[in-house]
Amino acid sequence: DIQMTQSPSSLSASVGDRVTITCQASQDITNYLNWYQQKPGKAPKLLIYDASSLDTGVPSRFSGSGSRTDFTFTISSLQPEDIATYYCQQSGNLPYTFGQGTKLEIK
Amino acid sequence: QVQLQQWGAGLLKPSETLSLTCAVDGGSFNGYSWSWIRQPPGKGLEWIGERNHSGFSNYNPSLKSRVTISVDTSKKLFSLNLNSVTAADTAVYYCARTPPWEQQLASWGQGTLVTVSS
Image (cartoon, rainbow over all chains, first blue to last red):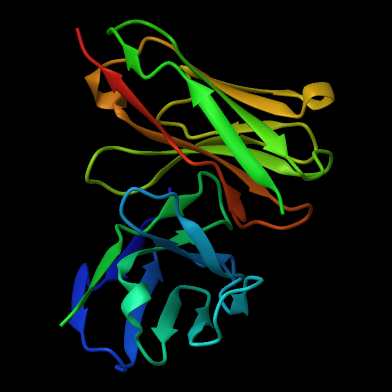
């Protein structure tokens, strides 16, 4: 199985800050990397797919980049409603696997 | 906008079979891939398996011997069966849909908490 190493595991930032989360795959997954947002008690929501494509209706402050084994997720200006746990997921090789998550809190 | 509505028994005893169903409301069914994912309380996400757009099933090797994902195209339903459950299978279970020729889990059900306890 491909291991997805996500960091940091938790993050505290202020409203308006730029926030960056990284995800590293144990093998080359080309660009088959997705990012999800999960709020407490809710299902995950797709934000970014294929490493850098913004899903429909997702605010433009969210972005993703990277390829092969190293990927980055960025919130350009943190908003209060962005408080959630964020997960990366590789969909390049079966079984599909997730990172362990990054819990984002407001400072 | 598609909605996935899921249901199933929430409390099981060890050795019983977990059965969950997901209904697709307001969207197309053919050509999509249908997946199940689970999340133990307070933990991360684990992909269980999928029925892909070609009609083939792919399962997580860690669960493969106990899992079956089935699809009823005429009723726009897909289901998860997991047999011989133990306490380790206690989790919120989610259904999800992947668009044709794509790879991401684009739409999710609301989740069902399944607790395994004697």
